View 1 (cartoon, rainbow, N blue to C red):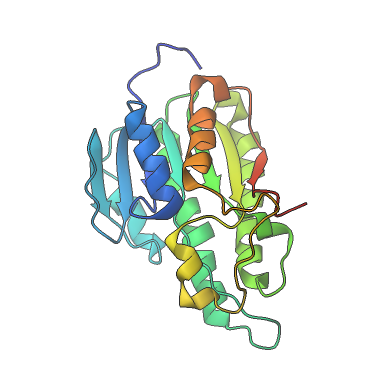
View 2 (spheres, helix red, strand yellow):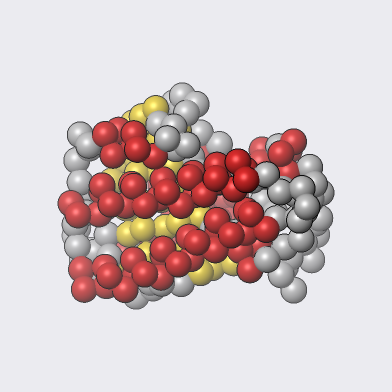
Length: 229
């Protein structure tokens, strides 16, 4: 990607909270223009535009972004977690997570990537638990699906110099940890003794989105504070 590329414009889902908010703030601090998609209204300093979007209704997303000027990066950070052990699984929980994590990513990429300049970037937020974690089978399955999307899109888009990578955080200090829907799996501190800082995840995202990320594609980065040791 040339250093003199046009003004950087990112679309970030889940911009109102957690890792999505941290990534949005980091990109704004780095001089990006950011269009944030979320259900909750968000106002931030810098070159920020907020669009109301319900990612649980992905069929509406293509219309929501139709009028945007071409984006140089798509960051899909929106998500939620429902936990339950085998025997207590709720099909509606699986459907809801798959819709927000996977279907929404597919609709947005399908709408935005055709007009994305060559050398663009896609970052998907996965999870350390995508390889399996007791009580999180449905959540893990949806995050594992993002791995499949990311690797495949990386191959499809490589001729255009567009990179696609997945960030897979461990337990992160965000409001999601207090969601009653994940009460079946209490939080455990990772080996380093602290929850993952969302700003650390944002810093890695910023690197992958920068010109120095041009040689990295199809990869999964686990940021877990040692939880996977």
